Amino acid sequence: MVRLWLLLSALAGFSGVAMGAFAAHGLKSRLSADYLAVFQTGTHYQLIHALALLGVAILAMVAPGRLVNLAGGFFAAGIVLFSGSLYLLTLTGVSKLGIVTPFGGLAFLAGWVCLGMLAWRMA
Image (tube, rainbow, N blue to C red; front, side):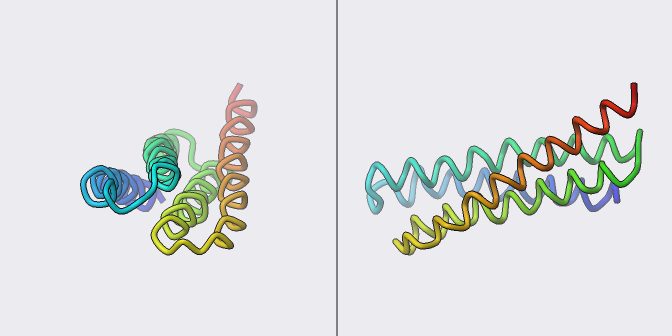
């Protein structure tokens, strides 16, 4: 699983930087300031959770187990649901896609809860 989390971390980090650059250079003149801010929120959360996936990969080497893998799965799902829905919302203008975003936020929270539970059990 270490390899999977490391690969997902690298993919999320790479695509997060690419999406941020795309927004700054390719979308700045095409999106309203509000939509640009929404897009940037997606990249911000994606990059934060790319680092969280890196942490999961490291933890999977030190303390492999169900909670570590659940955290990684929740972080990956959160990136797809939260950031992905924000990207699609801003690029398509379909506001109904915003209904998906909170599920991504909940996935992020669940990932952090899993890490907290792991820390509690390690003590």
